[in-house]
Length: 324
Image (tube, rainbow, N blue to C red; front, side, top):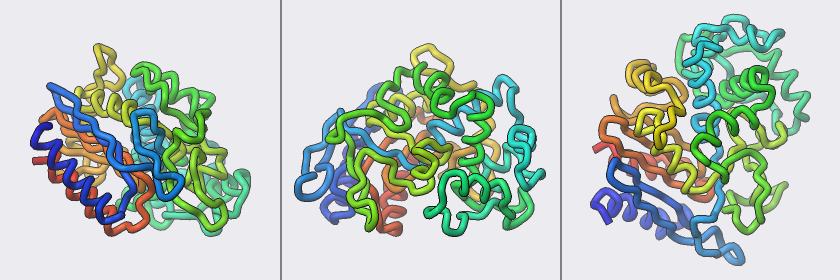
């Protein structure tokens, strides 16, 4: 076990000991090797099943970087979309004609953080509310992370590719043989790591946890993707190699130059920036961090972390290990 991996192990084990999480599947990737470990169990009581490589996780908002941003990056490379393209070019009838693709990726669109009472809407009602939404500020003014940004990007991808799921599968996942990744995966329930218990839905396992993704039939630009540690590790290996996976160019390497230069309040296109060379994305169940200069990456997958402050500390402790 390398010193870096031992440090990651200590952070994860502490989180388990403090009952922040029941367990974690994690891997450290560098230019020489991949180290992986499966620590703890799926959940409590009858769900106290030891984790193993077959376990599938709800990735939550990591969907934004694995599926949505990656597919948009591919379309940028072949100039099917441009950062300055207004979203009404693809979604006629959208209320704000000033918002462009770049604003959505940078979370500077001005779209609000949420739509009131969205969880109780039907999919059609939500779409109507989204198309007629009022922005909080002028596009480009500041960063305001909102799932609505990547929901809209997902709608744009659906317009271009005909299907969000199919477009992501064909162009992002299949080239890397990520066969255990996708929306609405049809696998035995026991393979899914439960996220959390919900007052209305009970124990959520094998079904998307995010309430907005749920009303959108589990397929959205901001959430809905499920995957295994192995598949997310493959994706991260591609990232540290500047878009190349085993000789296949999945992403144009020039996009990584843009990610290294473009930044506003710690946000770049789709990703957050920890420092000049270290980019990351998080959700309540997952973390990806990578550094192309050091050729180092980390993936950590867990059950749902309900305590946000504890979750932020866990992420910060792990980021420090990778960035040093």
